[in-house]
Image (cartoon, rainbow, N blue to C red):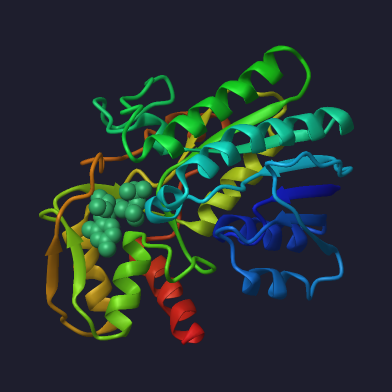
Length: 309
Ligand code: UDP
């Protein structure tokens, strides 16, 4: 099968491409390095079944494929807020172009949405039926509302019978191939701990996130694509919740140094709690659930960053 992966140079894109190549598929990666890393593509290019096209998805493209995985979008808050108008264009116009290309070639689509579509949730944990609590004019809205509109496009293309677009809502994920400057909590803590610096905790560190190791997430993608029919959006993430203080303690333990914590202001609209309800994934994806424990996943991620230094 021929897969087209937008955002191939990004963290999830690179991991997905590698998994598809391991499974024996032909993969075309598309990226313009807006937030992806050239190093990820250099590693993928060593595989004979991989080819790469440098392209900005807000411009249309025409690339034959059997399956189109739409992953292109900056996803860490500092990156997507740096150029908010471009972020919105990537989500909305980029997804439209993905759907147009898929319709042309009758390709199956996997569109990666996000737990951010739930905003600062008032329902906990979040099931797919929860419609969210997003501040539509806040600094996160360029991403949250862009991703919500992208889901709408996918749902309408599917309803109209133009394309079969499968939607996954990704909760916090971490692992090798993340950018060390992506500004997310896992990368910040690891980078700071490896440099022997204080760990920056925003607010009191009592806010929670549930962290999924990337291999578990990619397995979820593969199972969604293998479903005999479209079952609507599916949450993919780890239901095990940690506070940022617990995460800091775990990183310190694994790196082997007790570093001070530096408390900084809580960012605007930063959700206090986020945890997926994964009943739907378990039901439709043959009992899918994350297998990799936080300590094991963090160890692999720390090893990746140590090797980068
Ligand atoms: N955070 C933190 N220290 C950091 C970076 C982030 O305490 O150096 C917090 C942030 O305020 C948020 C949580 O960690 O509550 C997760 O942030 P991240 O940027 O990783 O992803 P988000 O889930 O907010 O998209």
